[in-house]
Length: 268
Image 1: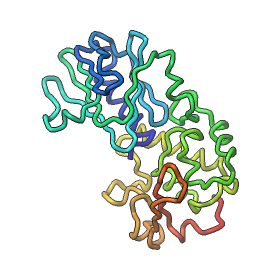
Image 2: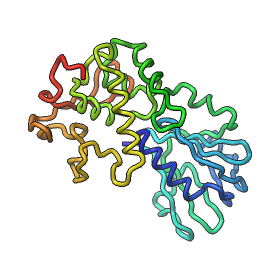
Image 3: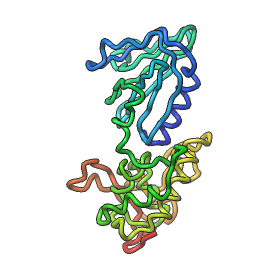
């Protein structure tokens, strides 16, 4: 799932391919920027904040993109091109001379803004464990503004902490032994945030560890509960439960849990 650690890894890959190079072809295939040519601009860096990717150019411009659920990026080697059947899905094309080409496919958010105005697109986000300006204190304070909110909804709320999505919310609830419907007011938020920050950093930076919460990289066993509905809990054997969504949840998030490992009343 494209969460903060996924985008962090993506930025590292694009950094290796594009940073420091001048674009010989730079296209934004979206109506709002169809006439904005990036040819001749130098890519000076990639940054992330939560699930948002920022590609900065030397002309004082920033390309702000977001994967949401359907977007992706692919990088082709020098002399290679994207398969023809995928070309209609390309919303961004960034090519460097005698080098690779990066394609942003089916991206729901593509915006070109002055670098000085980046905050207009990301200023609402909470602290990000993968950034140098991470503030654990602020990450603990923000969820407290909605004490009645369910932890499975409050944790992936990007205004609270940027980078956690549904997968991490469900896995962290399991690891802390918290029923996902527990109110934020009844949770040990500092412990939950500290564990989440450690997990996200490990997932983002260690080879083979991306979103592997169990320590087991075998297919179907990388997660404790997420995506395991109807299967036995890897810890106790109880059948993992799932709920499609809770009425009124704008994120329409799925919730997975083990009834035995996350007993009612547990606050982590």
